[in-house]
Length: 584
Image 1 (tube, helix red, strand yellow):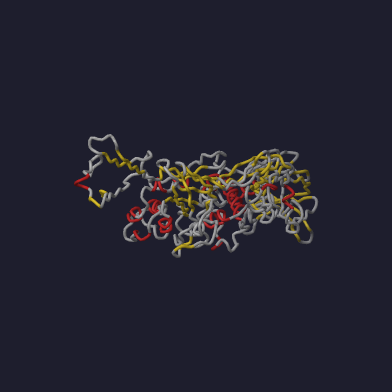
Image 2 (image 1 turned 90 degrees about the vertical axis):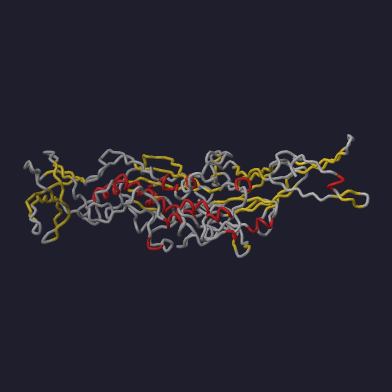
């Protein structure tokens, strides 16, 4: 029968005693948008009297994530997750939004963490009487990786686990499937995390708690049947089907019935998905974090030279290369082990005669131990034939690119934002002080491992906590004379992160000197050094030999450009509770 067709009492009903009876089946093909959208009316011929029966077919109109002052902009409007969009096929119906659950500065103090969002469910129409709807959350796939260690956290596997979030919220299982990493509703739930909401109005809300671990992600599905929700799955291994990575990523976001998935038919994943997923399930919700980066640097370069007095000079010829050079003997002996006159420190630097102001390129410097102890400087002859004045005064400078009087710049953080985005983190850069006291060397004294901490002014260290991430970058000049790459044969140290106290030091001059020697772009090398040390600070892995990083995989893959984190460090960063040096 069609809508509006009449039923004839005598022909369509059966007489049972004093009653006329007919069984009618009403199927709700589509939900109503107004109450009592379907009505049955009984009328008698030639009579104004009638009886009516009305029905309201309810449906879920939409499920929305609403922030609780934890969007990127501190408001309720959660913005799109770029990592999700960049890994989905064009035109895919599902979107993702991100939440930042970390604590924020409030009136100069660190406030509480903001790890709750609001799930708002809206029915198609306000129910005539209160009705119950059930909700279940799912840990959907991280689309930025499908192999270990980023996917299936810490394991060298690919899509073997149904859940890949880092935070464990409980210990529930159903049909041998874990359901413990999918976040949790902050309402009364059953032992499987199923939430029951009673709708007296068209909308209802509940708080939902996310983890603090960047990259964790969630979806929620709704149904009027609790048992139906328990049968649904989001299983990365089962649903890892499709011709392209993006198609597989899309399929691993779907929530559906496992028995309908055919491993030989990628299309079956979409066919097994719940009906009207844009109505009966949420978009993806992804956890991101802020990290506050305090940046300092030393002030102007000063005193980066040695003034000497010369005694005599004579030509020397290298017996191996036959190279001829001028050896200038100094008037006193310098201890190369304990002074700035370390052996060959001034290699490729300049020797400047104070009287003629003639400059000579330095071949090397040191002491000769024979019948007597002699300190010397070897210089290359000048093409114009000019000779240094001997005896006399001279100044020795190495081949540093930062000259006397130049300011030591802040470490180059320009690659931090794109690198950290791979780990679902946004850096907030705070250039605090670029005029800290200058010193030529900032040694990591093995007898005083906290020495270089005294050179820093990490003002935000006291607010570095698991809820409020803070790291520190200090732009210094050079490491000690054994690691400054003067001479070029040394093993240079361009950066270091204190695995105990936190804070990272970037030796600007050493980084540029080494890059020049290796004939690589010094700016790119400095950027990589910064990204490299930030990885140590966030991952809490002090060095590449840590067993957490198989095959000694380092934080970055230099000289690959641009500077990005390696997979093991992305895994470690996303699993870390706080940067190194946190106060709790």
